[in-house]
Image (cartoon, rainbow, N blue to C red; front, side):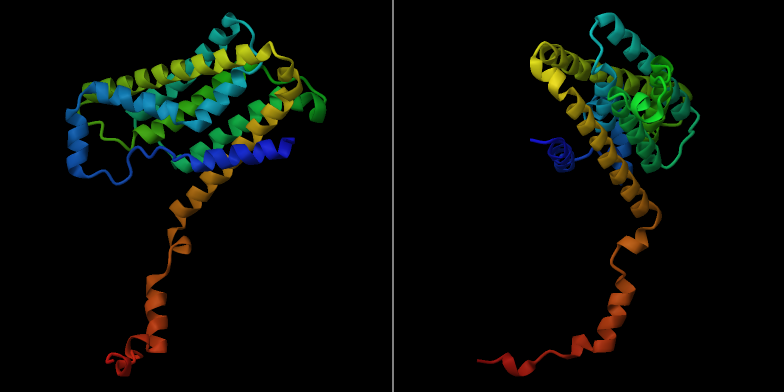
Length: 261
């Protein structure tokens, strides 16, 4: 299987997996039920969002791909976690938001950036050293946290400031638990693969596939943004359809002679 096939199959796999929709069209009854469900429900939502957040998981995979020691993994994951905790909590509490499709599109760029860096893109194409990875991971952590916040702000958080903060923190705890679970699988799988000859042969192709995954997510989010901002251009224009029927007098063209035997 060549490199382009890997990218194509990754895109198809991502497209076949349903994306998480946290809160589109939540009724007043469902919102009240969520508020009464307790903080554990928000922990569950946070964990589920991280485990189905393909952009977050792909970026983390890129970060840990070449890390060989537990110390390095812990260092970079901690920096990423601090970054996304800051923006998740602060942006949600103070209701700082933006179009979530655009935020997720930028997050997709972070996946592409990490894959490009892993394959030595800065050295090959720009004849320069990679930017400081620790600061880059922290900056992208802030961005990923803002993306999590835009989703969380679609959920009912209540009007009580203390209760709202506890729900935000509960969601954040769930995010961290989901992140730990995902990282345990990633790091374990990479550790096993790293000792095989195929790792050196296919690590470049794997990161190229990771880059293509970021491209796919980018275009998916931009397409979603177009739907969100210009919905009428993507939907069937009912008024024009009705007008066309009137022009053709479709409703009066029924052949009654064929009703009998």
